[in-house]
Length: 124
Image 1: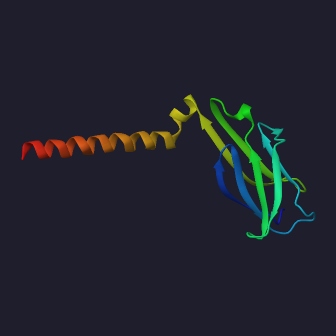
Image 2: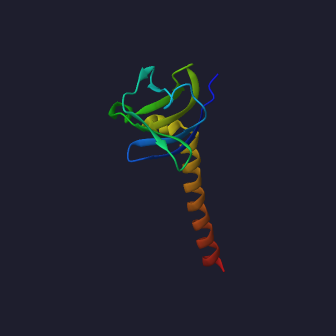
Image 3: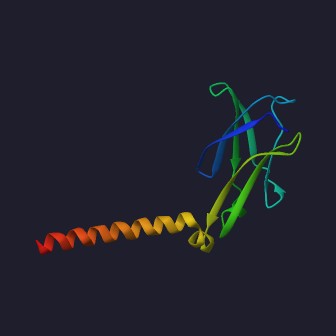
């Protein structure tokens, strides 16, 4: 079992970032990122003295920017323990996703609220 922990930071300009902390047999720790069971080659791990750990940066490959659900798995390569994951969802799959549905419901509720307020002002 790995002594490492992963804390996601953000996804910006096609690069997903996280902080890795904990003790490892190696310095830097051996990290493996996969997409659809294939290794992602665009992974960078640099020491981060401000956070007291390692900054993990994963450049999202172009093939992952497509319709569907694409889940990246982050593992400690020394013992194959899963440290975390991140997912990209696009196209038709996004329409079926619960988060997309909630966003649509919020937009519809805002529209209904505006129409109701307008109706109340007009009938006063």
